[in-house]
Image (tube, rainbow, N blue to C red; front, side, top):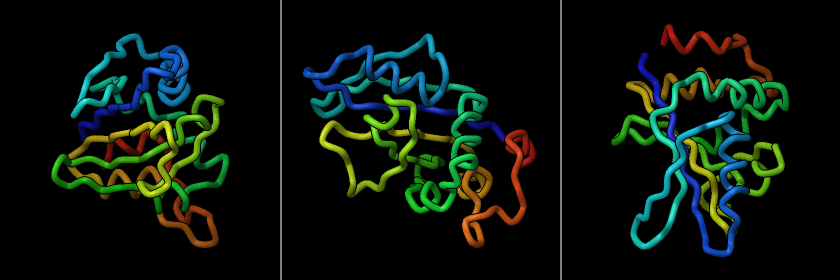
Length: 149
């Protein structure tokens, strides 16, 4: 499956750009190509078309911290763009932590949007944050299984 990763983060004039770049790098590792765009008068930092390998730390972190159920409950399946979307708390990500949030729990400075594009977003969701019983994966997933979806 061909999977691509995009990240978009709101960028307000009162914010330090380097801190927002840190958020992106904390999520995806070092990204050399980060650009700015304006959508409906709002400014964003973004990175596009990253390889799926960039979310391996995300994949591992949600298992190590046992937050699979939370991440799954916050996921948005966007079938119109063949994407799975996660909103992540910007300040937590800056400090190296990952906190998935729902659209109605947006922080005042906005959330980091992690977009995972692929032909079957529901299969990607089941791979990245499978349903659990008692908070535990019933069939533990490995990161390289993405290649067989």
